[in-house]
Image 1 (spheres, rainbow, N blue to C red):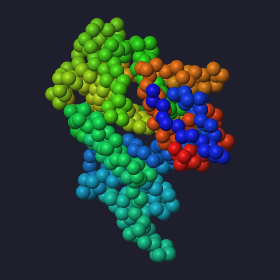
Image 2: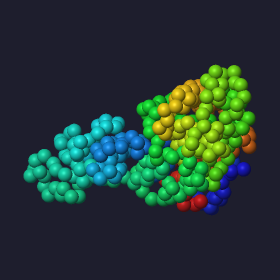
Image 3: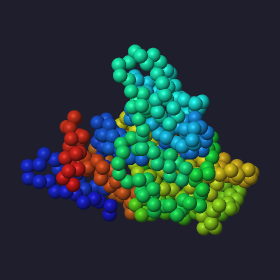
Length: 403
């Protein structure tokens, strides 16, 4: 249903034959360290990554950081209130300019190694013992900028510039998300970072379909299972579910349904809706009536991933709102534990000689669509067997040129 157009090999081409035509990726793509390095470069460092929210750095000198694949970023608000994104790499010897994950700089950023000092807008201000350097140009040694885009208060960075803006990419959901006043959100607790023992793609393979919800997530199914659907809004994968008012055997679900209040910022049609949408390659937003959540994956190795998440909410002092936020997190914590087992079992299955790849339900189209998106950037993912070690990046470029 979502199979991409496959270019034919030309006579004499050294591009290997493609795979079996199955919708799903071959097992080697979840086990190759060489592929993980290529994914980091071609998917993560070359695309928009969520680094934070404006509410986390409200004042001049406040900063937050984001690290991935050997790259380090710092996002900081300057004295004029503007937010800039820079490589967190001192122009002297490469030390971190700010050492903590997040914090505050009073008037300048001072490298803790040798004391090189930068203005909050990234310009180099001064260095100790300037006369000991041969022709050091202060004006040309400021911190190196990273491409930054603010989308409804969320701060996205792109280490390799070029390509579509995030606003263009998410234009299809623009009208839908406007009601949630995302730029006014405040953090509800600190950011969560969890390391998990399986490939990052598996998390999305589980997450991108609701076919498993009735069996694998009984509490979630009890919340909204009969009114859950996966779809595309433009090119953006979405999932929509409406919380019903039926009695649930799970107390957290039952009380969530009973206590969920109405919210002035939402139209009537959205009052009891859970709305999920994905930002390729690694991010999911969930818009609940009472709060907003994101979670995203970061590859560490072929068999190890980070899942980073955080919840935000509008100011609301009602007891019912506090209660349903707590109950929501209980429901989702249980769901996450259930998904972790599923992903681990899938990771184990790649060693099997009978791993199935072509039995997807139409209810699982999101898995095929995710794999199709991956293959656009990384056509080597369509290969049945892993290429010879050391040739993956060159082969991928050849396949892109022949597409």
